[in-house]
View 1: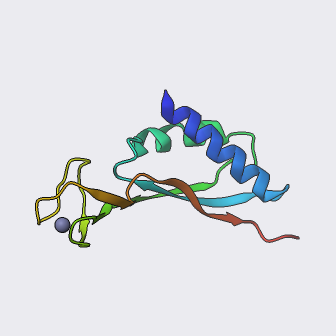
View 2: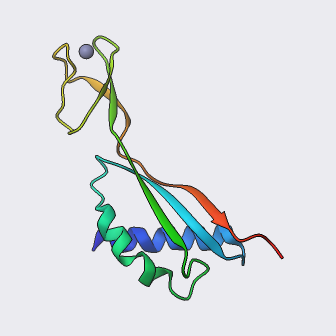
Length: 112
Ligand SMILES: [Zn+2]
């Protein structure tokens, strides 16, 4: 499962960033056009986090709406699918958001 690999990556990156401290919460930003199943990430997160700095950490996933800028008229428009055209009819666009998958924040336990 693709999402299991993603979750392992997230846990590995957050563990490293924590430098021995406990991670309380991780916030992910996942674009709606990224093709990532956020439910699958939620589903395996606890298991992957077990025994790491993220054991028991909260996982927040923010889904990011996709946006594109039309290269013909410059309008920025919402892009619910990869095939959404601009209101002017052009499909020539630059995607601004919607395909990302990134760790937005990592909340650590206060250092003792
Ligand atoms: Zn346009």
